[in-house]
Length: 342
Image 1 (cartoon, rainbow, N blue to C red):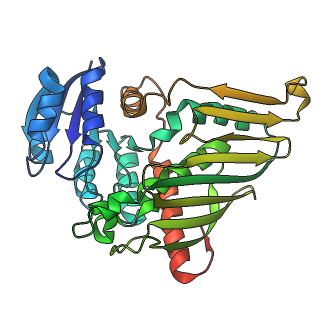
Image 2: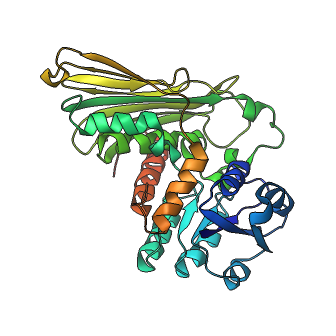
Image 3: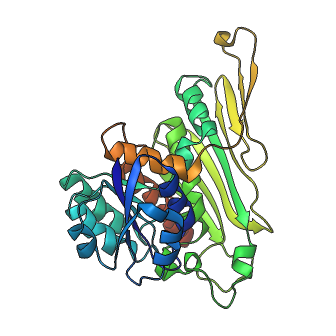
């Protein structure tokens, strides 16, 4: 049985799914709660119930209660590094809500601390454990589409989350607090997922961004990112807040012997076509899923199992650095109008 720390604050994202995971997972015996302002304690205790341990407003107080097996950190991005830093210095494993920083240099520093103190540092990029992604990765890295040609991905979400708070934008639409807009908050999932699927790093980026909806925000609500993998294949990401409801997302990977694609926003299915003789004449296959997997509950369980030494971590600190570098390279490219090499 494990002890976790839930570290959050008013306005931080995905608090309820993390509370639900703590309540539901039998592997978790107790959760120490930390919030510098104390505003979230009542809601956390109401959900977690008897698993709730002490309440703390500082990392020092939290650590004085005992070293947790893992700290779940979901905070406004600008505030996260100052909380994560002392945890890593104490050797505490951290699973942090992305982006956990406003610039990649901050996360590079945290990665160095994690390595120096033998701690895991894992960004919450939970798409990695969705059934669709796991099966697509097995197919692609098992030579199921042949030599990699190109990839494409779409992540389109609701514009309404901006429009309903025009006079009081959420922190994810403020550059000083978030570091960027849709690419930092949601496009990052697709960029990480694509590298994970094909098993290659992104080596070069070219991008354009805009505020397509005309809202008074200082970050992008639309980003178009083109990129090149280390092996030479090309890719593109269409990333934005463009619809009246949570919308279109998916990916396609093309290779010399076929393709594999998923449209998770519209169907819980994976389609695969291959002309390889290994398909024994059954060139088109479709995998259907009963839902999209366990989401945050599964992600918390796997990251905690990694912290307990039971499995390999589903994402490493270096993986986090790499995808943050890609995101911020896209911003640099959009600003300069030039390609950025990583």
